Length: 334
Image (cartoon, rainbow, N blue to C red; front, side, top):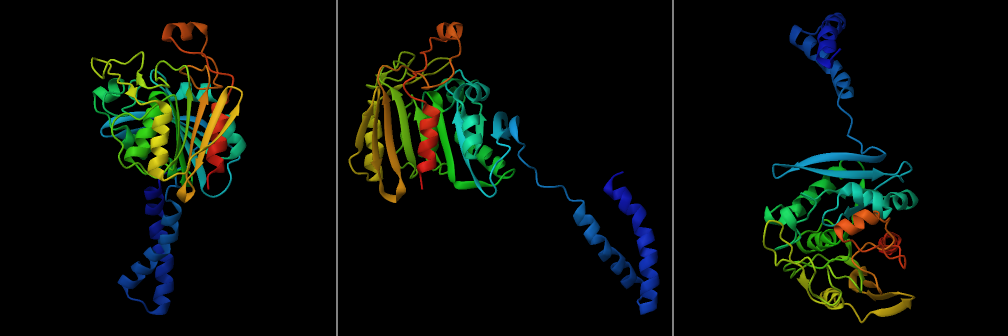
């Protein structure tokens, strides 16, 4: 039975009881009614809907932004710590999806270990509008993906306490470009982890974020040495793709310069070279290069030989676990 029907049946009885007590106290009719209604306030308060909770485990969700229904997935560990927790956005690459990123990169297991929430948003038609000409239908149609990701973070925060100082974004390829775009056009994240991506378009005043950039030196889709990638079409046509940036070391050096960082320290472990700068305000700018690696997420689960041939995908490097490296970087930030 609904709450209004219960109250409708309950009010007359309560009123009669209250009236007898009020008559003994010498109250007039209006005051008797008021006294009866006041007694109902605790009952009404108990019937208010509970605050929606973000469910444990992996779940699909939708949200409407700018009149367009968008999709995303979340993963919440069962043993999430009390109090505000970190949130990591994992942004898939071009032709990928949130479900694919969740399967491939191993973030759920790391969330179980370290106690944070993960969100896997879907780009429009498997693409992100990371800037002029890149990439795909999201760019062609002028989709506001910054607004979408901000709305997703806000909605998740209504279902579980999120620490705004520990909202981070990691992305692959077009998703890496979107992570950079978030830092350029928003203050919703405090650290980004682009993998095999660059900044697309202008970014004169980025937010004061920490950065860990991971890139293979044999990446021909987003070249380590800069210039057009093998899929670049100058941002024209039905599926625009404009990938034509500076050498990756120069890109990261520019972020260090804007942050006022000192010269970075370098360490080499096999095929992996890491340059790290500890910058003012507790920021860290780090570049991780993987010698011989192509356009891939190091340490990811391989999609299969057929998919690699069809989509011309480079196999993931085994020289580095990108997810573990990024998670360690995020945890170490103050």
